[in-house]
Image (cartoon, rainbow, N blue to C red; front, side, top):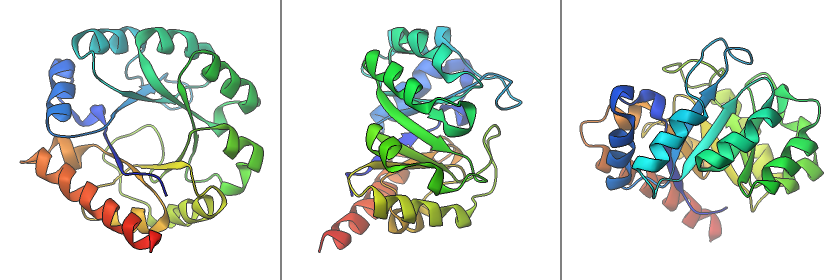
Length: 225
């Protein structure tokens, strides 16, 4: 299993001061910032687009923007997200009939490639060729489109299956994740944790990030024995 990566979800931040909120998380020790882009089609909500990402990158140059694209036409967004400074581009398997084409396009724009599956989608849709073509697999542990939902532990079976099939990949979990279930996620095989309210709403975000990282690192160390 790869190293632990903590990616706070900015939808849980004070969006009126997004750049400073991102900087606050970096100062508190996070690795990535999880940017949820929703188009109102693939999911009912609309959040941010490339202009917001551009503004954040301008104000926080060192940011690693982990872009989670909850959009109906993932290929269309690739050029502008790359231009805005996105480092990782994760699209949903359910959103396209040509995942291979989207993967190729993302790589052409020099971003890391992530492939996401929603709770109702089985891990078996990720074929060996698809899994090997991407840098990261994202297993949603809530239904995409709304923050603050309850964690769905049954989705961790998919994490376990994917970790067995793709031992060297980054595997991300997103939805209802925090210190209380970080160990559960890591034991299933996730090394990239997305957490929103658990970090942004914490009295001491630095401590929360450290606790989550320590938990995941401990599991990784145990599994290497």
